[in-house]
Image (cartoon, rainbow, N blue to C red):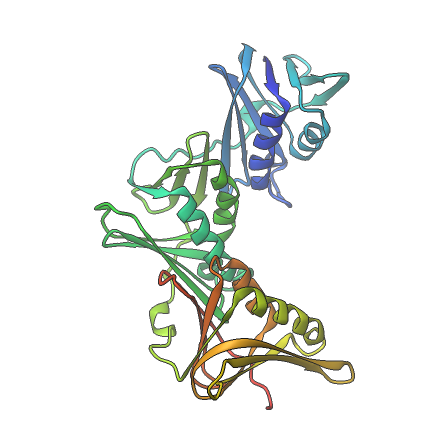
Length: 376
């Protein structure tokens, strides 16, 4: 194997596939990245052999075709520090040593045979839909963070995909919050449901900014795998088996009070309150007060015994009666950081009922948060 590749291209590709390398693995070869040089392109692949596999293709000057696997962290760290100039890569077949030369830097890295690397599962047949890359990225960013991070209920570590009537609905929940976003597919794509690991979608979201138009999404006939094809890169994920909870019944059908505020101002006051909430179970209290002939206000408070307290206030459009409710500050900060509108409406019914956050002007997204029970 012998080739030349631009440092910027190789660094970008390594950064993409390295995210699939497991932090802990019983299969040492998965700590490596597979390099395949052929047909004027270098293909990089990485997998954890369980959940996710990422492949990334780079245009390169191939002098001699070949394959090898190299340690992910060593290769990535070395390439990232090189200057933005061409890198010459050559493999000594017998010793499996790979030499890399860039500008006035040279290195030699020991590799392992490519045939020891776990095969990337092909997803060649199945139901395929086309999705706008930017719309999918926004949807993932607004939903995936609400998925559970522990494995006590595996289905909650994934994002539920529901394809119906020309639209795709993504939903995630961890027992304390629920995020739902809808994307218009715009074609007769049939009906399908699947649970995609949130981890795989988060890695996909990091790749999507490189795509300007659409990507193809293919579910295999067995319902065990999904392929996201970005053209220059692919991501294959193992689907989570099980039944996702019926989340529709968790979304309140009405509310007593709607409080509309600036996302930026609400985020600032919540961050300030969260400093004091650290020693108080992360609890932030909200009090929405209607204005009498003037603008209403939303008061954001936090207090912790023997530490101190904080109170902030922002202007609000309050429709309904005065409302009080308490939330986990982290949950508020995460959903506010995911919104792409300037204003958000907070819908509440009582201190003990779930609160609903809706971005003003965007009917495709809804976020439900369970309240914290506090003494007022």
